[in-house]
Structure formats: structure tokens, C-alpha cells
Image (tube, rainbow, N blue to C red; front, side, top):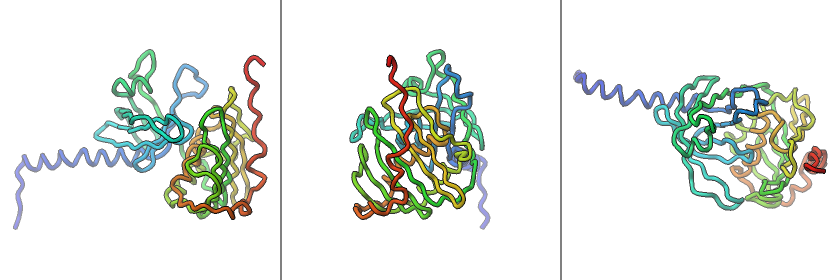
Length: 292
């Protein structure tokens, strides 16, 4: 039997499907890492990083706080918990943006509402658009092993050491301000390990400096060693200031990755680390305090 739909019913169906398709396109196209599109040394403009992966977003904070986000029509909502200290969070905040442009390489957001404008706006004009460019891959190297250390700071910086092999197996030492303290072993979920590899591929490893120093004191020192089939790359970072943005995002995600791994307490790994000399050596010297 042939079914004939009236023009009004057909119109209603088309209208109901269009936003869903648009939302799906936005949801797909927004995936990845985005950075403010301007010369970094322009001190008159704010510098932002947004990273979208599946239904989670991280932004602004180097320690990798993950926030849920949704997109309805052309509106992006980020549901964010601000960390008060290591064990507690403040009430959720809703940051809202209107998507003015989104394609494979460009994302333009405009803050909407008093709370969002107060955080992401500018004193001169709170509705200035935020122009972002997608960070694109710089290499396709096969990763054999990563060693990563994050140190303490004058505050609650998570301090840890980890090694991850090519299959996503992790050896983890939680030192300070981590949800797991002591020695653990386990495996990272496939999607989470792929995210870390994507971060490495977005980093121009051939151009990494031996070290990067912030212009202030009492900040966190981090160190990473990336082993491939042909080369090993190493760099030290003091503070989050001078290092490449892609490297900053990688550090931020590494500080969070242990939380999604299936870790079990394992004191035997103390003799299984491949880089036993790496954890405590070779950090950048912090700059001298002002006035000294």
C-alpha cells in the first residue's frame, strides 16, 4: 500500500531532522585540539586551548580537567567543575558559546551569558569572537615507549612518574596529589591510548628544544621521553609558558590518563621501569626569584 504524506507532515519531518544532522556534523567536526589563532607573543590578547574528544572537553587548565559538553543547533555548552583542591570541586559552571564557524581547520566561538563572558571575554568587548585553529599532525611515528614525570609545585600540582609501552601497558608511580599513591601497573583503554598517540603525532618532535623555562618561579617541572623505532626524543619543561602548545596538551592528558587505566597496586614494578635514571634527573633550573 502506498503511503502519501501531507505537505504539513512532510515539512515537520524535514524540520525535525535538520537540527539533528547539523548537531551530528558539529559534534564530529569539533573533535580534536584547537588553539587561539594569533601570534603567541601578542600580550594584548587572551590565549586559549580547547580539546574535544568524544563527549568531553578540556580547556584553559594545564592539569587536564575534563568537562562534559553538548551541542544543540549552533550552541556549545561546557559543564565544568572547578577544582578547589585535590579532593573536592566547586559547583558546576555552565560555559556557553555560539558557534559562528566550524570546519576542518577553523573554529570561531563567541561567549554567551554573563558567566562565560566574565571568564572568556575581554574588558573592552565581552563578545569578541574567539578564533581557533585546529592543531594538525606533524608526524606518524610508531611509539614504542613513553616515560613521563611531573613534579611538585607551590600548590597542588599532581606529581607522578609513568611509563607506557606500545600496547598501552602502564607502570605508574603516584607521588603527590594523585588519586592513586604508590606503585601500580595496568593497561590504558584503547581509545585513551590512541588519544595520547594523537597528541604525540600533533607535536613537532624534530623541533623540540632540550628544555623550556617559564618566566616565574614555584611552578611545576615536567619531563618526557618518547622512544620510536629509530630515535628517542626528550625535553624538559618548567612551568606552562614557552613550550609548544601541542606538547602542553600532551602533558595535560598524560597527567589524567592513569585515572582511566585499569591499575592494580604492584610493588614489583620498581625493577621494571625501562628508564630508571630518568625520573629525577635533568630538569630545567627554575628562574631566579624577582629581587634576587
